Length: 170
Image (cartoon, rainbow, N blue to C red; front, side, top):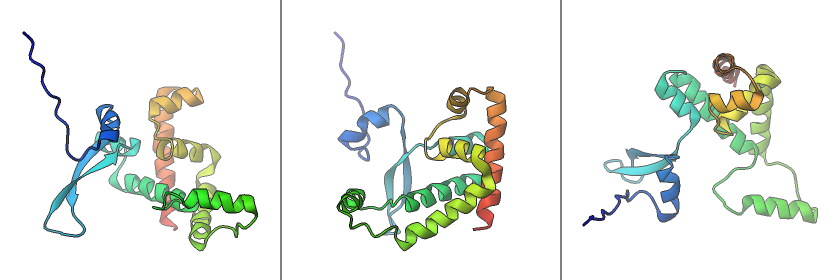
C-alpha cells in the first residue's frame, strides 16, 4: 500500500504563486523587517538572469547593481508605481484628451535613459533590454539574434561593461 505524502509548501508562498514557485521562478530570501529591525522575514523575489550571472561569477556585484538601477529607471520612466490603477487612469485620461504629459519623475528618468542609450548604442541597448527587462539568458539571446553562443557571451559581458560606464555619469 502506497502512502501519499503531503507536499511541503512554504508559508511565504501564497496559493496563486505556488505554480511559479514550483517552476523555480522565485527565490525565498530572508531579510530584515523594516517595521521591526530585530525581526527577520521571508520574502519572495523573482529570479533575475543578472542575479544568476552574478552567482555564476559572470558579472561583478557592481554590474549587477547597475542592472538593477537600470530596471528601476525604466520602471520610473514608464510610470511604474505601486498603484495598480495608475496605468489604467493614464490611459483613460489620454483617451479623453485630458492627459497632461509625463510627470517630473518620468521626465528625469527619460533623460537618464536617453543618456544611457546614447553611450551604449542600439545593439548593446537591445541586449541589455533582453537581459534586464525581458529576463532572457544568453542562450535565448543567441537564438533570438541568431548568433554563436560564445560570441553572444562576449557581447553580454561588453554590454555590462558599457552599462557600468554609462551609469557612472548619472
